[in-house]
Image 1 (cartoon, rainbow, N blue to C red):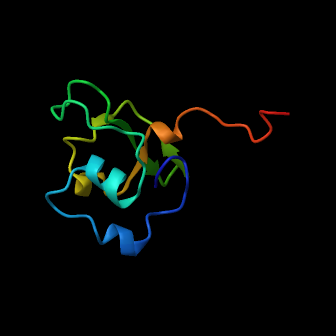
Image 2: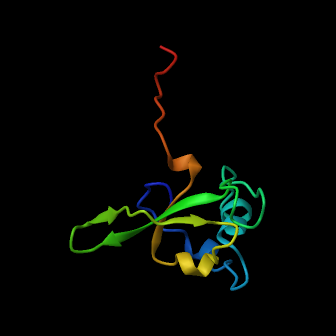
Length: 99
């Protein structure tokens, strides 16, 4: 799940995840979510930070914890079963903001 959407990644895209691929590379090049950036590539700058959460079946909801990950270092296969929130999924947006 990505950015609060309960739609899982389509199987044809999930199948493109490679064992040696970072989450950042998958987000940017496969899912075309380009808000997370590659800064230092060492996990120190925070440009690639994402929030990892899990779906709690007993609560029937996504449980957000304080697990932040540096997507430039985190293996994409390590995010299997996680809800990933990127910078695109933070904040709000109003359709009628110009009215």
